[in-house]
Each structure stands twice: as C-alpha cells, then as structure tokens.
Length: 552
Length: 64
Image 1 (cartoon, chains in turn cyan, red):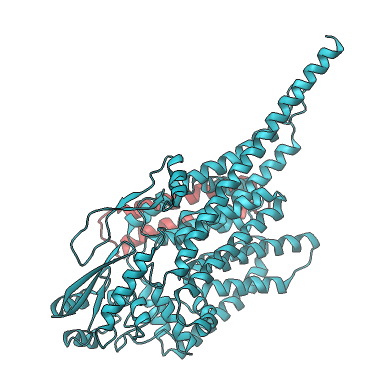
Image 2: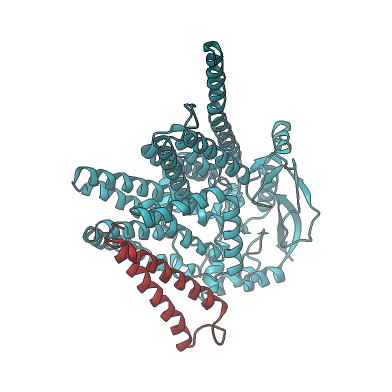
C-alpha cells in the first residue's frame, strides 16, 4: 500500500477509535443526567413536604409530639393507662436533635422533615466518599451516592418526620469511618483508639435513634472479630456496658416505661407474606445494585479478605426480614440499599482498574477493548438501574411529558383509602412509581392543606382536644395530643395497657370530636367510638378519607 | 481469622441451626405436626450455611 493510503487508513482508524471511545463518556453523561434528575425530583418532594403542615405519613405527628415533650424537658415514655394516654416506642436521639428547632420555631412538621432529609444527604455523601476513596472516579462516586437517593424507598421516607433515615445516616458514617480507620491502621501498623471510639459513638447514636441499628452494630463487631479478635472483645465489653447503662438510666428515669414502650410493646406479629412481598419488590427495584453487591461479597469471601461493607450488606439484607413485622415496612431495606450502593461502586471501580491494567487490543488498533467494554457496561447498568427505580410526580406538563417519553402514564388511577366510610371511585393521581401503587411519594397539594385546615376547624367547634389518629390537627388547634394509636395497639396486643379510663372517657363522650383515618385503635376503643360517636363529615387529605365524628 | 476457621464457624452455626429447628418440635412449639413450612425454610437456610462453610475449608490459612 502506498504511503498516502496507509495514512488514510490510520486516520480512519483513529477517527473510529475516537468515536467508539466517546460512547462511554456519552453513557456516563446520560447516567448522571438520570440520577441528577431523580435528585431534582427528590428535592421537589422534600420542599413540598416542608410546606405541608399536617401528617403526611401516619405517625409523623407523634414523632413531633415526642420532640415537643423533650423540648419541655419531659420523657415521652409514659403511662398509657391514664389521660392523655400518650407514649412513644422510639429511642430519643432523633427527637432530641430537633429540639432546638422546636424551641426556635414551635411544633412544626418541617423541622423533623428537614433533619431527616439532611440525614439522607449526609448518607449519600458518605457513600460517595467511600467509593471515591477506593477509585478516584468522580462520576462513579457521584452515581453511587445519587443511586441511594434515587431508591424509591429512600425517596418515600427520606423527607418525612421519621427517625429511620437518621439512623441509616449514623450507620453509614460509622461503617465508612471504620473502613477508613482500619485501612489506615493496617497501612501504618498503629492502632487509632480515638478513631475507633468515634465509630463506637456513631453506632451508639444509631442505636439510640432506632433500635434496628443492632444489625449494623453486629456487622461491625463481626468484622472486628475477623480482623482483630482480641480488639473486638476489648471494645465490645465497654460498648455493651455504655449501651446498657444509658438504657438503665432512661428506664429508671421513666419508672420502667422506657422498657415497656420500646421493648415489650415492640414485639409485633410477623407477617410472612408482607416480608416476602417486600423482598421481591426490593430485589426488583434495586436489581443491579443488589446483584453487583452480592457478587462482590461472594468474590471477597472466596478470593480476598471480607470488607466491612460486604459483611454489613449481608447482615443488613438478613435483618431486612424484620420488614415483615406488623408496623414495619420498606424503609427497613434502607441500610441494605446504602451498603449495596457502596459495594456496587467499589466493584465497578475494581473492574475498571482491572480492565485498564489488562489491555486487550485488536490488530494495530490502540483501543483497549477491555476498558472500553467495562466503561460502556458500567453506565449502561446504572441506566438500567435508573429505569427500574422510576418514580416521578407528573403534575406539570414537562414532568408528564418525561413520564410519557419513558413509557409511563402521566397519571395513575388510585381510589382514596377509606376505613370508616364507603369506598370511593379511583381518581387520577399525578405521581407514577415503579414500586406500584404507593401512598407515599405524591406531592401534597394546596387542597390537602385546605383539607387539614378544615378538619382542624371541625375540632375548634368543640371545646376539647380531639381523639384523633393524626396528631397534626390537635397541634394546629392548640389542643392536647391524645394517645398514639399504633403504640396503643402495640401495648394492647401485648396485654400491657389498661383501657378502663380511656373507655370510660369515650363512653362518657368526653371528647367533642373523634378523627379516624385508618382505625388503628385497639378493638375495644373502636367499639366504644362506634357506640358513642357518629360520623358527621368526611374530609379527604393525601388520598385518605378522614371521618369526623361527633357524640351521638 | 482464616478462611478455614470462618468455614468451621459457618458449619457449627448451621449444625446448631438444624438442631435448634428440630428442638422446636421436642419442646412442642410451633403449630404444625412434623416439619412445618417455616422449619423447612430454616432447615434449607441452615443447610446452605453448612455447605458455605464446607466450601471455605479448602481455602486454608488465607485471611478471612
């Protein structure tokens, strides 16, 4: 071949190689766009919730009530047998952290929602940090962190006044910091007790945010036992002692109501079908993250040392079976999702580094086919994962058009939830979620706020506090919050509450208003309400039909 | 800890799990006569843990 012909062939080859090597960059850009899109959607939902002044998820108001009690220097672990029949089944830390906001702004729902939301951002940042530290690929670190926030489950509960995601934050930061600490110690051959102390304090904080953190505590000590058995035991004893002493202190300070409400009343029936359904849904929604994390954990088990992340992932997945308990739910998978995001990032980093160091070229081409294949596959897998996680409000024409372009409808027909009134016809809801029909995720509207105000006005027509399944209406009316229905049911199911005084008050029609949403009260309480009160008004808020009842 | 030791721990845990699941019948707990569905699932899981442990034994003194 003549010299100009060779030059032309080389030029073509270079052009082709340039075009092919641009493909991964394009796919990475698309994957980042998809996950940044989810982050935008998450923020839209969070901002809408910050502005909504009533319960969005049942139970939020009672967490606000716990915070109000702490802000007044009182414990929320109390006697349920006497008026106002209120107690909490959650540890204190999340509520204590919010106390300064309640001091400054009063009992506002946005306070706890903001703290929980910020907790999810810190978790995502910790995930990104762990992946970045291992591979120094900013786009992969960003995708791993954003994937956590894009999870349907994290989206649903992240900006709610619930303590779960705050626990996940402490767990994630503890595990990432431990991984960093052990890596440093093994590199320089010196123990860092101060750093390990920080890990222990973070774990303690996680446990006193929500009891479920015991799984992460177990994972950390299993890891330490594998790497440094003596040290694991040395640290386990004081950790258990401090945890126990704090427990004992709160129990003594509350005359035993701490143990009764957080332990005894938390023994709820296990519903196997609920656990199985949630496991199937979690796997379907997070299929790429879960499979990659699982494969990487198996790889580490057989071919290298197990990392804290692999152990954490396995223990968290096993512990997710507790999502089958009555009162539990999808949020119980959040720890496993955080662990899977880190492991996926680490696995892909490892694969990319391997592909870069093991070049495979064809003929005279300079292109590393290995690296190109992995660089193409990784963003493609993230894009597939993004599709699995699809969730989006569709209340604006642009969002509706995006949903349609992705092959989803712009509205979903969902019947309002009724428990105390006649069924209603399905109505269009501008929110689409691949998790299926979800009560969480839709943006609360001005109509929902107006509905909450209307219910409050019904309460204000009477003189007393309402006997209400949501705390928000009494908060807004400036009336006392009476009982916590799910906790009351927990106690009733465990034979730990005497309903005599409450039933007497209901039978004497001591409450001017009763507000029902899901009829979570124990059966004798619902019987008394049914006999003494009648429904006068129905108000729909957030897809639930509330029954406003007055004395017969 | 080595891979072999980790394997042995898995085997011991699996065996204890199997014994515990049969022990449930001995103390008369559970609502099924014979092996119930939950017990069957538990036995499968315990068996899987034992097999996992066995596969780690050949890896010898490699760090776990």
